[in-house]
Image (tube, rainbow, N blue to C red; front, side, top):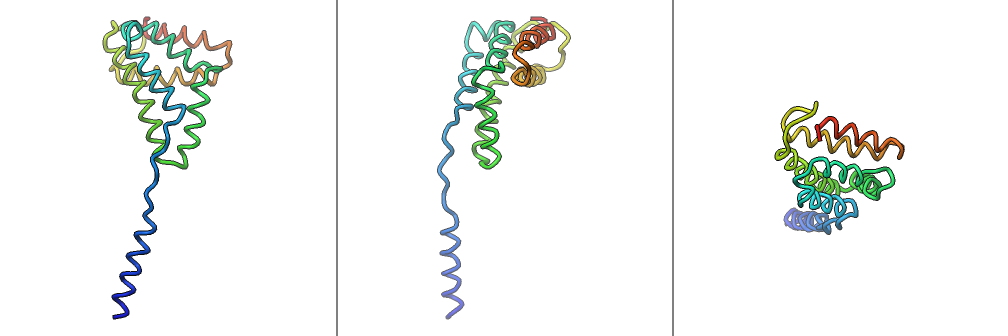
Amino acid sequence: MASGRSDRARKRRKKKRRAVRAPSATSEAETRLLALARELATPPLSVDLAAALHHLAAAHAPAAPLPRAVARAWIHGRADKTAALQLAWAREQVRLALEEILTRAPRAGALTGPAETRAWLLLAAAEAIAQEPEAAAADRLKTLLELTGA
């Protein structure tokens, strides 16, 4: 009889430990990344690779608010798996929008391979612009334009 009571008490304790977490709030980074993805997916940017790259580079410029917001969200995401997934999903939306532009754009330049891979490389390069001195941002953008033939 005593063992039955202890089993019930153990089950109640387990239920108490499984507290449901509230969903993570939308971060500034997620909001900004999703806005960037929408802008890239909308004409005129969606049909003009050069304009899209200019816009992408400006969004990731050293003084722009997006890189700081992403850095803060990334640090927060190390302790919150849901926040990390939300940030990754928002970033993926930007990559997908860029991939769509690359799929429609004529292939030119030295950057070859599937549009999926080129979009990933271009997004990584744009994100790296945030780590560069402000004076170097224009040179980095010029290199991206040359690589894509835009």
